[in-house]
Length: 421
Image (cartoon, rainbow, N blue to C red):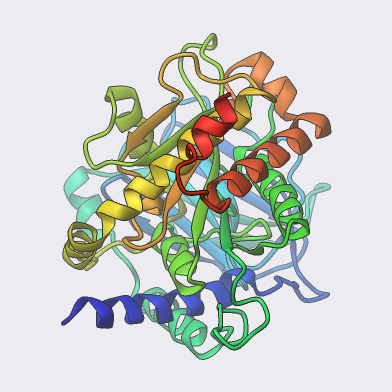
């Protein structure tokens, strides 16, 4: 298959993904509410209880490598106030929850050790509690766990149907067109990281990375649109979007620039400052490689079916088409570092870094991943909570976009040199 054909296929997939990702998620009026979640750690089992407002259909299955329990349910409203966290002595290592896609919500439970999951029991309201979904986890051997784990056929079929639906509802009128008045405008795709069942890093003050970057992404989108850019977002609500769909969205819209927004964490609470990443399969250092490895686990965190995926085509595309794309990404990253220096703290050592992030691998779209700061650092965390910081940061990134696309005057220095003077 020739490269132009491959590119056009990816573009079509991207438009389909964009239609699904940006469709407004409006749950029905009778949407059930999740009120609480708690863990009972007993001698012979670990009991996971979800309190809900109404009875509902629930599906439970297990996945190996890493060992997880997935609890699927219809789309719900999340009203959990400080849900109980495991103490680490039972089967549950950690868990997360959120919207997996329109119409479907999901709990994903990470296990300390292999466990057999019971079929869910729905208990009626009593003793001041609402309806309860009860799943018991019994100790099991690794061999037994592995043999019973895997994707149920109906779940895989539902995922395939969602992909087909997306392809049938592609937003044909929103892609750049040579005959529309906006054909000369630059197209920017903003990618707020994580979302839905994948909450990302938790700040020392308790808020989630997914909420911070969504808010910052929406602010940046407003600023860029006011400056005349065509702006699309990979997600504009609290929903999970697989990593490769984010890439396809940017390619489907024919993006001139892809900006992925995240916030970092570090075991050392003294580490602080923003940083910007561009693509490199090797990484600038071990810390950058470790960060990319964590961020690239997003699909596993959300319980995405990764079986049967073949990266050979994407590697071929990268080899053929990505050298100039990476160079343009680097130029924008260097400009953005200078602009951000005026409004926020910057990572002191090498704020422009490189690593193998999946979301940066579109072969024909310049792309950067901006780590806005460290949610593990109290000072970074506090300033990122403020409207003033978020607005100033959005304007700084937008200023970097302006300089990146500014017309070049023959014989004049580039955007970075002009900014630094």
